[in-house]
Image 1 (cartoon, rainbow, N blue to C red):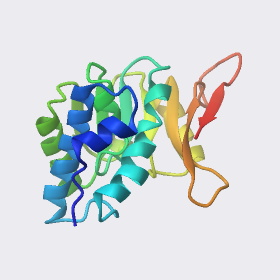
Image 2 (image 1 turned 45 degrees about the horizontal axis):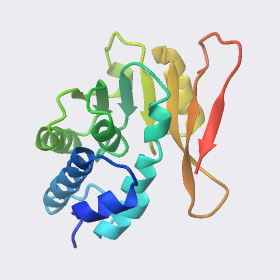
Image 3 (image 1 turned 60 degrees about the vertical axis):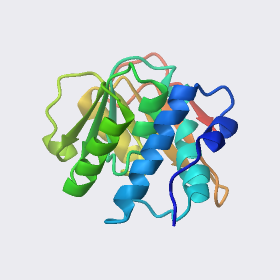
Image 4 (image 1 turned 120 degrees about the vertical axis):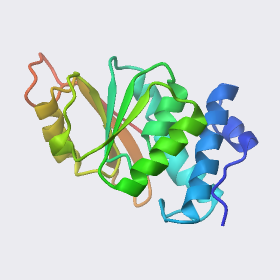
Length: 195
């Protein structure tokens, strides 16, 4: 079993990706592989599966996140998807990762150090206990149902949400940006689904 994705594969899969961004993604996959020997962090068993279904899926959210401003709050960060892929692409943007499981927090911190992501902080807490004084952009993948995440976003005063959503097709997925979340006034709600 190898989860480490070769640099050439990242560079060829994502047209126009900068070399340093691709290197950070590779470093994350190598760190994931090392840690997965002791604990199972993801369901994928091969680099190909991780690339196709994990990294490529998270990469789709990069362009959406670029349409937003402000710090990013990733809910239920787990193994770092999508947050560490997004932070790799946007290394100057502030990211806050929320994870309640101790072993996952340890992995995230190790990956962040290895990837040299100075603007990323891991919060070892449950969302209900989080104490941050920011108006964030929320990201979430498999944390809760999208409607529940939007409810959380409203309570947190989020300016936008970038959510992983399932499409009607059996294997396809996508990301949706919701610029207005419940509880925040707006003239209109704008969202777009990317596949």
